[in-house]
Length: 311
Image (cartoon, rainbow, N blue to C red; front, side, top):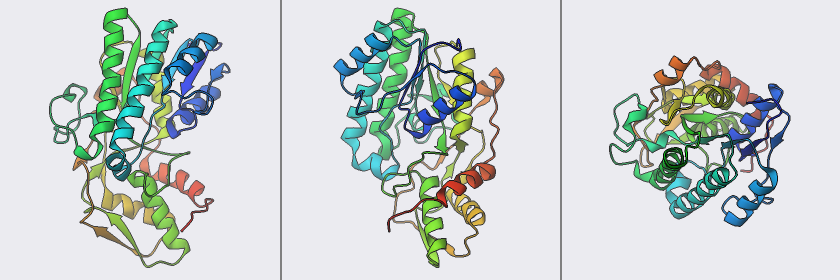
């Protein structure tokens, strides 16, 4: 990407979008275009088309999405499907109409079948049933991948899709009803430490295995792929290593210096038993993550310590 190129980051207030903006600014890109949802509602086709016609961006990072953890995905099933379908369809079609040079679409590792072999290869897409608790979100993201592939096939558009693993970092969501496992554990354990609560309750059995990537590493990978990858097949972005939710809780306890205990509520859902990405394709292209999980959790916990959580 040229340093003076107009780059639209959709979803710049979210964890992923804000990380991409930070990385672009660090690398000297100054013509970064952003809009809040109150300025341009990406679900509204007229607003999106008018924005693209006015701004004419050269490159698009499509990081905007309605996101959440197991509880939110399962409770707001219609919203997760409807909103995400509209966002991606509007932005991708507006990009085509305005002849942007390249678009990068951010999906999610939940696109893969619930019981797919591990680690998850890009070729496993659409080879089995999805995890029910986040099926609407996954279907919306699969539709986004297929939009990128189809616009490439029919119109020759240079649109690529990337599938990040579980993310954490600055601007994460710490709402216990809507957050993912790592920020939820950070909040629960920090709150217990501050209030001298002897135990922390965690959803599930503690056995599910999850992979975690710091969002700054994701942003770096996205810029790397925007520059160096031009193929139709999606690309996984992750670390290639995973950890049980029990061991993750113990790591956070260590970082927070919390001396209480963890109690697992096995009546609550675990979600997918394991979700580890095969990142051999990305690493063969020449990219590797830099931030270890413990280092990343320590970085994030410094931010959590400054937060005020309502009880």
